[in-house]
Amino acid sequence: MTFEEYLDKNGELTYTNVGKSMMPLLKQHRDLFTVKKKGKSRCKAGDVVLYKRPPDRYVLHRIIEVRPDSYVILGDNCVAKEYGILDRDVIGVMTAYVRRGKSHTVNDRSFRLYSAYIMHTIPLRTAVKRLLLKGKRLVKRMIYGKK
Image (cartoon, rainbow, N blue to C red; front, side, top):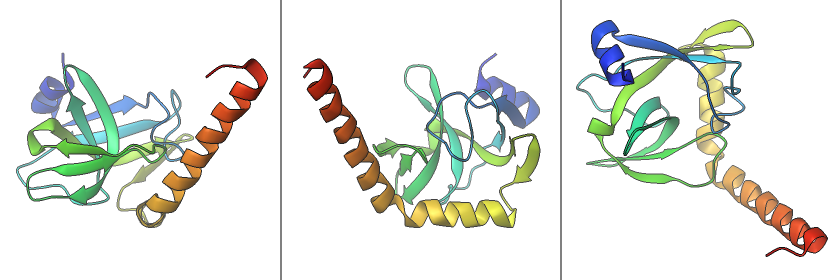
């Protein structure tokens, strides 16, 4: 059963986090997230959404910009923005998560503060992360002589 089919049948889905793109909010294979089926209304900046990348890859990332016909999306631990995500690609919106065994909703003050921090520090965080990645590649080249 696909995520879309499950959401159509049940309205919401709780699943374990896989991947590092939403760290530090969600840690891989430890934390859970709950999404509810996306309704007809548009999502807003700051929403964490489950969307489908062709052909069959599901991704949980944050909307950082709402455009008239699409969204710009970025994982909290990523540097590359994804453009052109359409409403039809978004299948669910995160409503809750379990982190270190404790349940939270997206309405909790702690989540709202975290989201505000993430949204307001995108340029700084991505610049620092890019510098760190370049530094790691440089060190590898120096040690191993690889390009």
